[in-house]
Image (tube, rainbow, N blue to C red; front, side, top):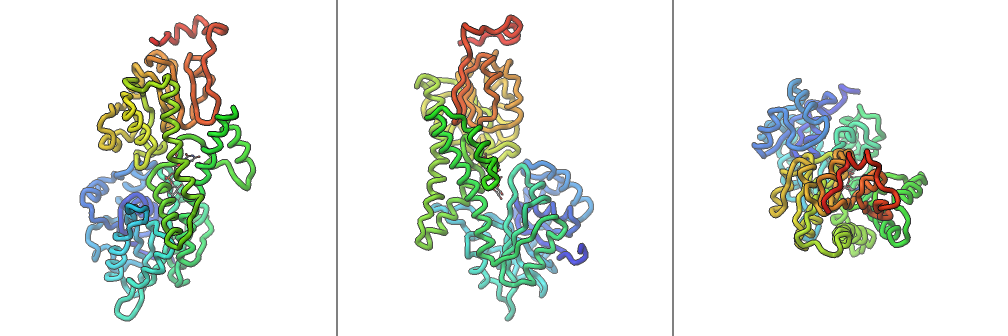
Length: 458
Ligand code: UDX
C-alpha cells in the first residue's frame, strides 16, 4: 500500500492544522513540503521547534526534519511543483457577521492550480462552509482541464492533536471525482480508521456538525447545571447518569465555564450563518452560544455573591488562562471574559497559567500575570479555577490555605474534590453542585491538621 501513496505532498499553511498534519504525514513516510509565507515561523520551525504548545510535536518535527521527510518552503513554485496532492490548511477567520473569510483559501487554490501537474489533486483541509468546495471548482480550470478539488476536514483537538491524527474515529473526504478522493484517501491508508468518501458539501457539513453537536452537548449540560443549582442536585452525578446511556455518551458533558478556543465558537457561528443564508433559523445553535455566554457571566455573579456582593478592591486569584488544559491558546477563552468582567466590577485580579501567560498578556493589560500559582493566591479573597490544569487540581491546597486571605474556592470546571478542601477550611463553590462550607465548631480540625494548616488571616 505504502508505495501507492501520493508523494510528495505540499501542505499550504504551517498553522496549527497544517503543521500537525504535515508532521504526522511525514512521520508516516510521506515526503511533505510545508509552505508558509511567514518567515519568522519558518525560521522557528527550522530549529525543530513548533510555535505551538502541542504534546509530541517538537519530537516528531525534529525527527522528520532530520530524516528529510519534511522540508520547509516559502516559494510556492518550489513547494508545489510535481506534488501529487496540494493540501490547503490556511486560516478561515470569522468575518464581523460570523461568516468564514475564504480569502486565503481562494488565493491558495489559485496558486495551487497555477503550479499543479497533470496528476495533482487539491484537498482543502481548512474548515469551510457547506457548498464552498463545489463553488470553488470554478477556480480550478486551467488550459482546458480541471484540477480535481476535494475537501478533507480536520478533527484535531488542541492538546491531543497528534494522537487525534493517529487514531481518528474516521477520515472524511469529499468531492465529486472518485479517483481524486481515492488518491487523498491513500494518504491516510496507514491509519486503522474507516475512510468515509462523500460529496464535498456533506463532508463540509460533517465537520461543522461534529463541532456544533459537541457545543450543544456542553450547553445542554450547562443548562442542566443551572437547574441542579435550583434544585440541589449535583450535575456531575447527573452527567454520569445521562452519559451512561450509550446513545448519548459521557464525553462533552462536563459542566462549567463552557466552550472556548479557535473552533467551537467560530464553527457554531459559521454554521448558523450558513443556515441563515438559506433562510433557515438554526435555533439550537443560537441557544448554545447564548447559554455559553451566560455560563461566563453567571460565574462572575457567583463570585460576587460569595463575596457578599462586593468585588471592588477584592483580590481574586484566577488559576488558568488557556481555553482548556494542554494548550497555550487563549482564543475565545473563558478566562479573558471572566477576568475583564471581574476587573470592570473593581476586582484586583492576579492570574496564572502553566503555559498561556505570554499569549494572555496583550489581552489583559490590567491583570497581574504570574507563573507561580502560590504567588498568585497570596492574599486572595477568592481562588477561582478557570482551566482544569492537573497542576491546579494537584496543588498543595494545604499550602494555599496558609496563603489566602479568605478560604474561598470557586471552581469553574468542577475539577476539584470538595471534601479535602472543606476539611482544610475552604468554602467550595462549583457549577451545578451544592456549595460546601467548612464544618465549624462541631468538628474542629485535629491538632495535627491545625499545625499543618495555619489559620488564614480572614
Ligand atoms: C475542537 C474539536 O474537538 C476538534 O475535533 C476540532 O477539529 C477543533 O475543535 P478544541 O477546540 O481543541 O477541538 O477543543 P475541545 O477539546 O473540543 O474543547 C472545546 C471547548 O469545550 C474547550 O473550551 C473545553 O473546555 C470545552 N469543554 C469540553 C467543556 O466545557 N465541557 C466538556 O465536557 C468538554
